[in-house]
Amino acid sequence: MAEPDAPSLRKKIQKRKLFIIENFRHQLAYIDALPQLTLLGLISGIFVGLVIVAFRWLINTPLSHLLRGGNDNFESLGSLWHFGLPLAGACAIGLCLSRLDKKHHRVGVGHVLDRLHNHQGQLPLSNWLVQFFGGVVSLASGQSVGREGPAVHLGAGAASQLGQWLKLPNNSLRTLIGCGVAAAIAASFNTPMAGVVFAMEVVLMEYTITSFIPVILASVSGAAITQLVFGEGVTFNVTPVQTTTLLELPYIAASGIVIAACAAAFIRLHLAVQNIRTPSIAMRLGLAGLLTGSVAVLVPQIMGVGYDTVAAAMLGELSLTLLVSIVIAKLVVAATSTGLGMPGGVIGPALVIGACLGGALGLLGNIMVPAGTATPGIYVLLGMAGMMAAVVNAPLAALMAVLELTYNPNMIFPTMLVIVVACLVTRQVFRCDGIFVAALSAGGTSLASGPMYQALSRAGVRSVMDTRFGCSRQSLSLDEARQLLTDKPMWIVIEELGKEKYLLRAADLAGYLDNAPEEVLTLDKDIDLLAIPARRHQTVPIHQQASLYEALQLLQQGAETLYVERPNTPLTSPVMGIITSSTIDNYYR
Image 1: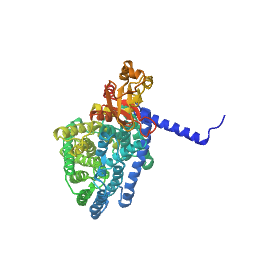
Image 2: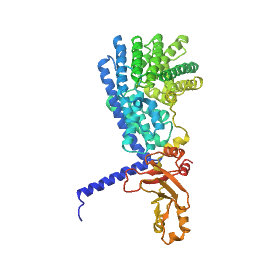
Image 3: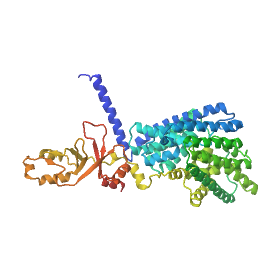
Image 4: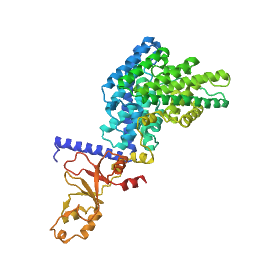
């Protein structure tokens, strides 16, 4: 038996590889593609973990040489540094962004939500690069922003780019982005559980088993990569404590109201500044840097992520006056900076503001009832949870974040109470939505939502397309028509090079053949599929990577039917399957 030659063997291997890849993509179009999504969750988790490691390293390396006593200790710098560093960093970012088109300026969690829910999860690489380098400069220059916003965008963008590079169906990009977000949060804060909940609650806005398992694996993978590089450990060391008595619960509930007022002020200031019109992004960021530097001269604790300030508040090292000063200064500067477009996050500032506000409330409680309240450190944690939950509108993510940041299960009961009160008062009394959704709405962007959107976005067109069809020219002979019906198709696709395609029900062609005119039966005349008595449907293409929700949008825009298009097929028909309104109705019901 002759051995196959090398070119032939390579061709067979290449053909087999393409078949495996194409089959993998096809399986991902189905709603129950759990094994495939789990594999992608692992890959994306590792990939995002490496991205976040690089991001943190680029921030920490210059800060480790500049700051004494830790990468957050901006207080160790002199007043000139407090003023000049954030101003210089903001001006550098502004000058760079002014050279880019405005569409590339959109970064952060809000951008991720918009691209996920309104653009099928297609996150542009250009915005990702702006977020990466802009986030590095903003955090390294002591801007009063958090690193979780950049982390979420970097994780989601890296996962989306991976999916786009692999040409995966758009419905699978949703889960892939959730995996990227969870891995990014886990890798940034060493909080895998909070990463999972944040991805499901804030970004995907749904809880399904098919999404949960890949997202969990991605979160664990991202956290593992971080621990390999930076080591294990909790962000805040808190001794196991609990509230003194149940009589303290009313004071905790009252604290939730105060936290809600602070959260509402933060959201409204952010939105008000966001709507201010300025000539250029350079001016906006220059103003943000000027404000940060000016306030930092008086209250240097507002600079950077601020977790050293949170730790000091937990240990009771900050006075009541200083705590209140930090709350006011951080709220004004962080809300203004992020509203002006600084490429940083809002959750970090919310945690710092909440921690200092909680510490102040704890000290006030001890002053009013010396033996009746728990240590101020407890209220620091309660303030963090309540502020994060109220600002982001993510109660479960806030609860998980505090639990994992402290490893203190005694905090669950009082934390749940303060979160409920803070969220209710913020939403119902102050009428403030979560900051990400509110900022998008203020900019004229609404997120696609609802049960139908969720259901149709989870499936690709390839999973429900009707493959019972045959393709034909407009004109064909009687024998060709009979041969066309041999495989009992449901549809006949009428296609001519350079012309629009039409659909004809095969039953209509069969009925015509049963009563065909004499000239057709005697083969004197060909059959014109556009002229026989039957209803024809104009059909338009939809990409094979599209979700069912995209198909529904095309049909609602006036398309009669859709055909799933196979790209780059010059020698064969591009039609892979047929989608109609009844196809989507049958799937959804």
